[in-house]
Amino acid sequence: MKKYFLTLFLFLAMAAQSFANDLIDVINTFQADKTALQNFYSNNESEEYYIRFSKFYDDWSKTIQAIDFKNLSKDGKVDYILLKNIINKENYFLQIEYKSYKEVASVLDFSDDINLFIKERRRGKRPVSSQLAKAFDLAGLSIDKKTEALKNKPFKDWFAADKAAKTVVSFEKSLKEAYEFYYSYDPDFTWWMQKPYKNLSDKLKIYEDFLRANYSKTSVKDDGSGIIGKPIGREAIIKSLSYEYIPYSPEELIATAQNQFEWCKKEMIKAATELGYGNDWKKALEHVKDTYVPAGEQPQAITDLYNQSVKFIEDRDLITLPDLTKETWQMIMMTPERQKINPFFTGGWEISISYPTEDMDQKDKLMSMRGNNPNFSFATVQHELLPGHNLQFFMNSRYKSYRQPFDTPFWMEGWALYWEINLWNKQFPQTPEQKLGMLFWRIHRCARIIFSLKYHLGEMTPQQCIDLLVNEVGHERANAEAEVRRSFASGDAPLYQVAYMTGGLQFYALRNELLAKGWTEKQFHDRVLKENIMPVEMLRILLEDLPVDENYKTNWKFSTDFK
Image (cartoon, rainbow, N blue to C red; front, side, top):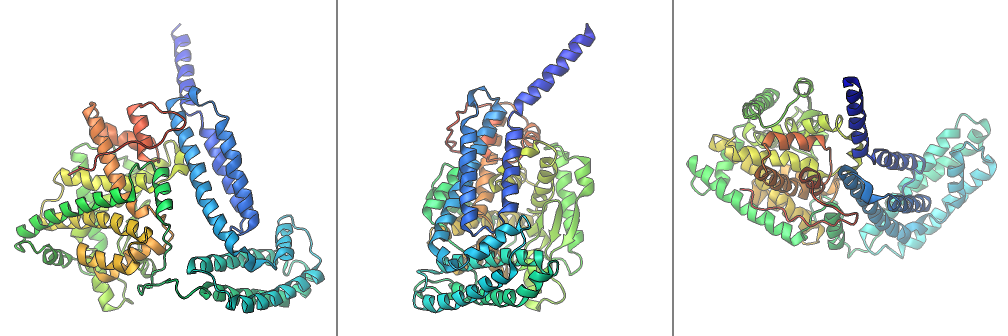
């Protein structure tokens, strides 16, 4: 009888687990299908690509509609909403890009025969090389004619010019791949095509440069900062916020950030007063910058900060830190090239240390050392390692990893910033220098919301963003330039910089709700990391077992008072 009940218990447990994860295969299939199509349709600036992916999202919308939502488990319902959301989100931005593509597609209206060659290459069809060589020569002549015609008809702005140039780059990349498939393997192809291909390839590169610069001179591309981004506009910001389940307008987020900005200033003045600088928090910050360690000693300084923060967290039993993640994190040194984009150390599976190299100018060396002093790093070592990004990566690869497609910086960066807030409230910083270091990063995250949203709303230029970071936050100018370059010219999502503080606010509000219901901090922290990545409002539904319908819209007005 005992054996029977044990077998029954195991069966029911397995059934419950299967029922709780009823959309795993659906989500995995969605991601696998998308990857297969991306690999096959590699020219992502082509009519073929946009049509195929429009169909892909349309087909998956129908797949979602066919799922019986009401009979799903709570996990399944949340997964359903998340999958539906990512389909709508990706299709929304695909259609924006498709519209931009169609406005400039005529720059390649000579490429039909060559696109057929590229497509047939996928199945290895042998081309008629003599005819293909003629098509390449004619395409070269067409480029000459189009260049002359477009000189008198520039694009309306640099955005269109840039899209046109990218279309040519993507085409040329596909052409190169197809050419190299046959070249030297097929003697007839090699004999006919070597010179026509080189001529066409050279013309395409010249054509690309011409297109990128061929826009109305009333359209300003560079405000003098050398940082070229692409503001997405108010409508796309609001759409992006809705896809992240943030029920606030850009203006409300900016106002919240400004309020927190002022709170940080007051706290910085308190710390400055402790140091004897009175209200002059900027002078106190300069003092803190000069606490940098000598060249060569930064790795040990990072290790010391790591040990200090882990001990503080474990002494208070705030979260489970698996022995293996403490054993396997390691350091690398950030390259000088990477430091131009990100002047501060970053983390994940490893921590990448940003510090001067011998070939840097003396001025840049000093800026790097001052900007990465131990007191500034006091807030960010745990952000990058434990219990921040390193622990997130560790747990995400082990628990509900099928949710990886729902990746969002509001969870990834928000969680790491939440720990900065939580540790501040637990009096982790003891000295005024440590307080100023943590406050520097907190006020910086407030500034990120302000300048990134205003940039995408068309209210600030990159140079104005740099000046804000230098004059109001206290950045070294080179570091401020790198921060703004990272925000707008590195490929980060438009809301990425907004996500740090906003996501931190969400996690802090969710923590308070659950503690009020009797949870311990450790229960909350451990559970978060076992649910994997998703918008925090969706996580709230799971943790608080809240009702949800299949047309769920964001409605959680999370607290903004986290001091």
